[in-house]
Length: 313
Ligand code: CP
Ligand code: NVA
Image 1 (cartoon, helix red, strand yellow):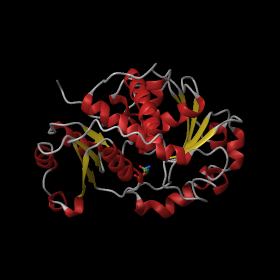
Image 2 (cartoon, rainbow, N blue to C red):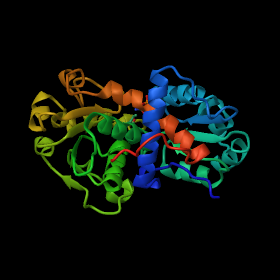
Image 3 (cartoon, rainbow, N blue to C red):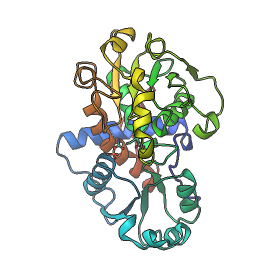
Image 4 (cartoon, helix red, strand yellow):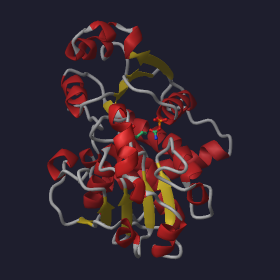
């Protein structure tokens, strides 16, 4: 059987997400009740980081330990990758030694080349183009708080970056709508976002109009990792794309606020919003742990007996 990878959000069908979310709910419940669940004993996860990380590293590392497995963390600068060993050779070697690999890197093409030479599942822990594990946790958080996301409206305010692209893919898989508002010059590139069409998102010049009637407002840093040289210009260009209280008021009364974190209070989000009552950013971060445990279980063990009805997503 071909090895399954998780390189972008559309790699899984909606019905697979429903399964993974149902497993997440059960795994999270076991964790909260301090009941050990260790189906991945003797399995090893290798994590490769070419960029910084806090949440992704801790959630994968803690998650694999909790499932009974072990973890090896590789920072590229400390390895032969940092001295130019071809990614294909690295893939051939380390995937003979471990059971699953998570990579955070630059271009999506790098992780695709790695996966083509991998004997084991490869998970995208963030590339310049996508961040599927983030939206896995975000969608779970939305559904946990509000039920099905089908037909709902998500407002994306800010840069059309890896997190934005992944929301747009998720909208196609889960059949919801995204209102996107970016400053001029930072628009969504549908091809780079890997979209099938333009049916699931609408572009707004004015971020207030994008926020109107939304069930969820979400944003991210103005300068992503790798774009640091443009930071000063971006601060000027994005000034009107800050999520503040006024913008939250334009959304539905029960709208949630999410941010993948790390956040810059006073830049892309006002402190009153991220630290306010509509913000679910800490649950969102925690759910990275539970959803990724379910993801690893699925990639390594396939479907195991379900514990109840699948979530209606
Ligand atoms: N949201 C997220 O992926 O955080 P880290 O960069 O800390 O891993
Ligand atoms: N868009 C951000 C996300 C960080 C988790 C970046 O790529 O730096």
